[in-house]
Every structure is written in C-alpha cells, then in structure tokens.
Amino acid sequence: MLLRTTDPFRDFDRLAGHLLGNSWGTTNRPAVMPMDAWREGDRFVIEFDLPGASKDSIDIDVERNVLTVKAERVAGNGDWQRLASERTHGQFSRQLVLGDNLDLDRIEAGYDNGVLRLVVPVAEKAKPRKVEIAGATPTTEAIEA
Image 1 (tube, rainbow, N blue to C red):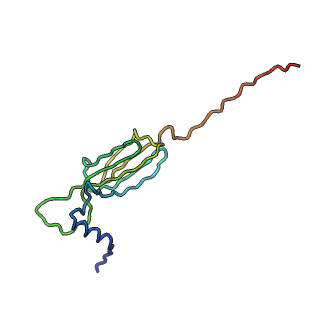
Image 2: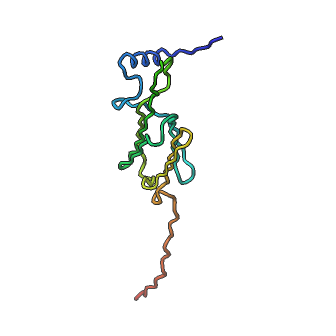
Image 3: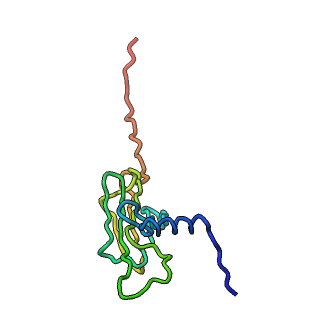
C-alpha cells in the first residue's frame, strides 16, 4: 500500500522552479534553513539544520546586531540521471536581529552531524546585579535659639 500526501502549493512551486530553472536555492533567492533557539541560563543557543553542507561552505557574519548565516549544499554531479529531487540544494541563508543584551563579540560556533550550533552569551551589562544602598551618615546640627 502506498500512502502519499500531496501539497498542491509545494508541488506547484517545485514545478514552477523546475520550469524556470531555479528549483534550488540561488544567490538571488537563497533557501531558508530550519532553526531552533532557546535560552540556557546566561546564554542563548541557536541551532540551524544544514545536512549535507560542508563546514567550509558555512559563513557566519555579525554586523551591528544582525547575525547572518550562509551555507551551500552542492548538488551531486556525475554520469547519472536524476530520478527524484526533493532535497534543497544550492545557497542557504538566514538573518537574525539580536538584542543589545547579548555579547556578540564572544559567539561560539560548532558544526556536527549537519547541525550548526551557535552559543551567544548574555552581555555582562544585561545580567541582573545587586545594587548597594549607601548609608547616610548621621549629621548633627546645632539648633540656635
């Protein structure tokens, strides 16, 4: 028994892309990479799915508070005929606007099993802190009559 779910919009988009010759991510229209983000204590963690992209093809830029991640997954070439093409190939791109409360100078990046993991620490100035209350020194004033 064969069960197939059909998404007519996805199929139409794929057909239009094949007819126009840009069914994969291009520099004009990069494909979006799936992402998860969460906070762990004093740091934010962001993970991007990039299966099949080589580590050398990944580019991470930070300008002001905008984080840009770009990558490329190259389609296989050879003496063969493609029978199905459902995986996105070509350029991938994602931009995130990060808050001022993050330390963008200390971002750590790792790439393992097709997942790009960025760790962004919270800036020291944004961490909660205690404020000391200065005690007033008792003053004595002479009252003249």
